[in-house]
Image (cartoon, rainbow, N blue to C red; front, top):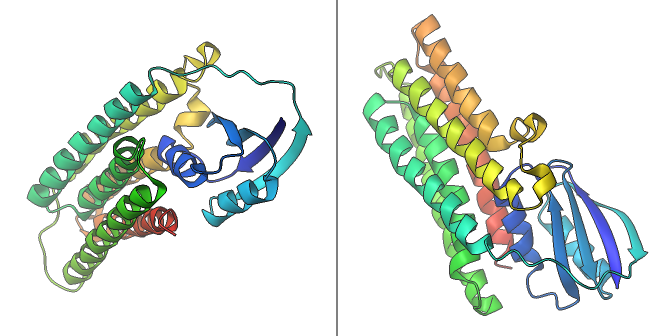
Length: 264
């Protein structure tokens, strides 16, 4: 048995963990995957095929780099019987906040909230693919990933077009208070999801480390929308909202392309 450790710089959210799991699914040499989101490291226990595993990780373009490969005598791994329940929980939280944010975003005229809702939807897709394709064939998983990826791109491009329309037209200034309040709740929801998933890894990490929470893209996006809301009120302009919306749409499209890589 071999133990290969990877450093993955852009693995700052549980949805990236699930992307990696799906990408490596089907490589029969892999016996166990051990993720450390805090240190952004992945330990793969496997029998051969080191180069194939490394290439699969590199293909996702998450800043993956192989640190070491060594022999190990470990052959038994703890089974996480609560994994499916946890995935259903975080999927539900993300999808509920997608509905909340896109509804309040449209009502309050905030593209930042609309864009963040799509980011929540993107995470829901990742968890959903992991759950609904369990036990299915590799072809089925690839098909679902392809549909999810293209749907995400269509939504993000539509968002871009709306941002451009609002930038060059005289549109109403978004409701900054709604932006801030909803983003604070989304921030709490993302932090809770990270806490639940990391708590399930080991008892030693039951208490969430602050460094982990604040390196999450999702949390940084929430903070960005809150800041945009403050600036909308300060400058009495919709430009900060459009800027954060554009940034988040770009991140959503990047996530969509990562999902599409799973379909190849």
